[in-house]
Each structure stands twice: as structure tokens, then as C-alpha cells.
Length: 69
Ligand SMILES: [Zn+2]
Image (cartoon, rainbow, N blue to C red; front, side, top):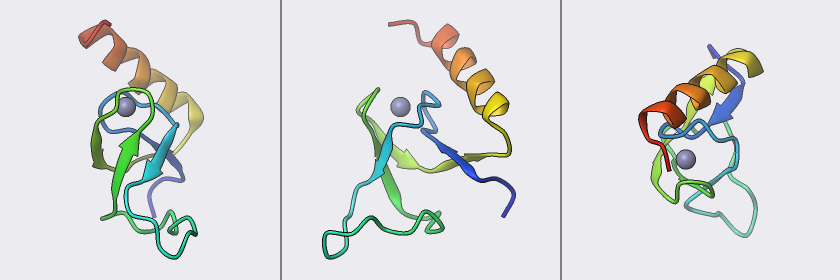
């Protein structure tokens, strides 16, 4: 494991959830191959992991610059 803070691979948002639910339970966050959906940009993709919250915020800021809404 190289990171423990999960974020959207498109916008860096932490508001992501697994696309596939198993038995109504949240699938373990360790399932890195799992497809995730993002509540902020509505796209689905692979989970992106950051080592620190600062890294995630930086990534999110860069994404916001590249794709202003
Ligand atoms: Zn997103």
C-alpha cells in the first residue's frame, strides 16, 4: 500500500463510492481494481490513492485548473 487517502482519479474528490455494492455493504477500500463513481464529476474510474491529504488537495486543485467548470 502506497497510500491511504482515496480520491477520484479525475477531479481528486474524496466523495467517491464503489460502483458495485456487495450485499448492501461497502466493498473494502483495498479493492483497488474496483470501479468507483464520483459524486462530484459523475465519472467512473479507478480509485486514486494519496499518501497525505495535502497531496489529494493539490491534485484536486490542479484538476480544477485544467477542467474549470
Ligand atoms: Zn470526480
